[in-house]
Image 1 (cartoon, rainbow over the protein chains, first blue to last red):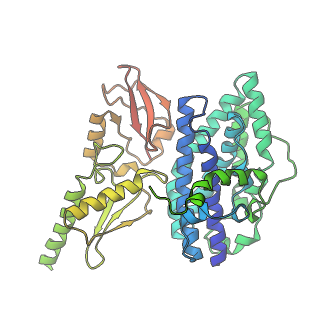
Image 2: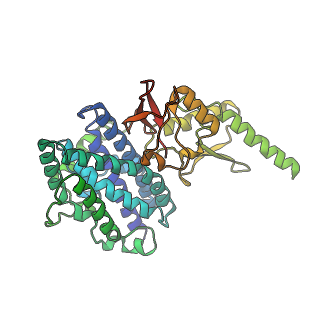
Image 3: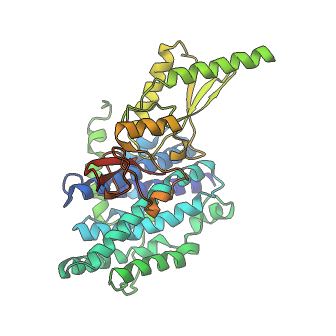
Length: 250
Length: 165
């Protein structure tokens, strides 16, 4: 059970950490000041979630590590985030498509996890679900604005969605590793809220005049450490400083 | 019993008095007590100040804790520990009435009462300068995690809104 909880806390933490790092790449580069602020704020919330979940993972693991050592001193094969969050930012539309799929999922996930029998998970979820509601709303509004915008923005929104869609099934993957956690109410079975997620996504896509991408073979593997080539590059940048200067403080 | 209660009352009062002079690092017009960050003062052998973070990723959290520590130490309360409690989750409803007035005077529209969702519903926001309700949102995410950018259509001043949370 301990090992399963460690895995689960890592997943929750790594999803947030990696997407937070990805979004930070926009800082200073976004098309407008307001978007720059928005993406940086969302990134900040996600890194905050990661801090809590990775702390839980480190405590559960009990090997004297902390949230920072898990973030900065694990190698790519030890990360447990879903593949969606490590995908490159692409253009703004691709970034928004990724956020749209993820934040709507995370909001439903955290809503369920507010009832987790693990007090830490429940407390972090209760706090974070209010923040994620803002992320989902931001992404939903931008999907509509881009999809139902100019011919150019429509094409880009569709292309971004198309790029990210293959990673959706992994969000709802059946997973025997956490069955025991679901049974005791620590984790939640993500498949239960897929219909609700599908409906939310469908409503936004309809107002965005975007077609739902056709189902295709799911790309899986993030939860067992089989990542795309993009994650290693992200980690190289994120982990460089604490690895090069292990005692660095400020 | 009576004496003990009086003594413990005074420790709590003393701590609260000390902490009511600790400003929020991002919004120095209000104290950490007025913001509802200080949740409890526990007495006895395990005496502690219980604080709660405002936003999950708020970078001021560490600084707030350091400032509280420094204020307690200065007041001769070194023995008091600081504990962080995540649950129940902080809400803007815990910002006191005085805190709200001070925010408004500082130029930040205080969050509406009624736990969280109202800002997502898009309720009218009053301009902290002229009181007009004819305002519009410029950006839902502002200079800190707790603020959104608005502008007043009556007096034309831009202002921050403390997000309802």
